[in-house]
Length: 286
Length: 278
Image (cartoon, rainbow over all chains, first blue to last red; front, side, top):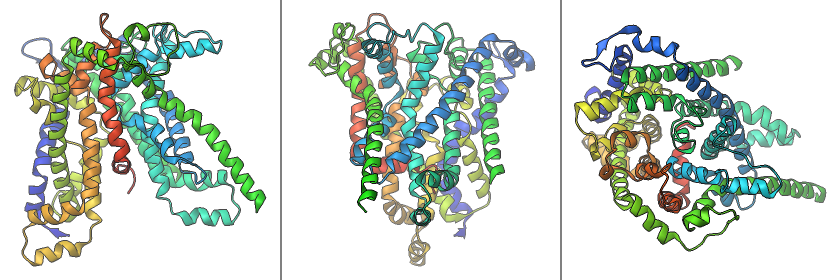
């Protein structure tokens, strides 16, 4: 490698230009906007206007509560499931591996709108295939859309279906990069497969797991399309309203950019705090 | 020896007995998407259990086209995704090349900032991006609005940096001794060598653009400028709408990507796994 400032920056220029215009400036700008009253013309500086409203807004705390609830339940369940998928797909005993991989990885290519539409139909009260199947095995129908608990469960099921395979791909690649001879040595020493998983695979995979957790948390933190389309704008009665949906409603329905920016910065602060906590926790144990 | 292999057999059977139902559950929504797309609306909303495709896809598609100009929206989606993928691969690999092959002032800062943005929610830039593109640049409902702002991506650059830094130095030094210019080395030596990685990157970027929903929903909201997912999304929740049609649209968005996935599975998986594994 050689020291070539001019050449390097020539290669970087278009990328850094896009980055500055569409990321750096917006990051600063949205911080400034969050301290402005934006429904007056011209916008005026009013430091406590949005943030003051935020800490007294039941709609914000409802969205925050729902988002954190989904985060706390859905992300661990999904990562655990992804881990199960990855371990089993990695098993030398598995036949027709390609078919199983297809089944779990296929949702990765499915767009949010397409799968939201299917889930809406599948879970509809009277004509949804899920309730029909529940009925046919003697279980009662579930009203997935009019009650909060089933509606939240539906959102979590949908997101888990869409993203478990994605995380399994990352975990599987991580597992396959662990050298084979580590396991061979353990097998020679008669260490059981289960112990091998807990004492070899898990510790060596920790950075990959943390990566999956961080990506999933940031994704779920911004959850928007599923409550927007599946449970119809965060229904029933705000029961699945998320921070992403609140931001959309405030920013792009009420055109209240200042308040929406405050919501956005809250999301960012939470995401950064959780990420740092996670990095710190995993470093501590090593 | 035989007891060992019978234990293996038992383990293998248990594995398949567990994994097969899970795989079927996972395939079920996709299967139902296809089934719904071939059923008339009164069949979708009937009390019976229907698990096999019917023959109504064309009618459903015509209903969809009546509800919204889906063919036009598909045209926009394809053009935007192709342009976006080409530009983004170029920008991303140029940046990745610079970060992998040169020593320069401010390098660790640039790398640090790129890493930092991975953990930053997109929500933070969304509102100013919208204000800038829609109000300041007056570019709402144009292709530029769909293509340019999403061009920045962090994982792609880190992936390309990784790919280029694994290439041996001699290759490029030999060209330098001959007096070949740096941009020619990049274009004609490095890029051809990185073809598999570029394929992986291109697939992931194409898919991201094809499925992108929130930004196109906000910035291109006029009927004639909507992408296919946005056009389809406007129908969900309407009272008088053909659900068979919506499902036909979902199939048209999904099945081509599934075919690409099957054909190029290795590249796909490499692209997704790239972020985490060195």
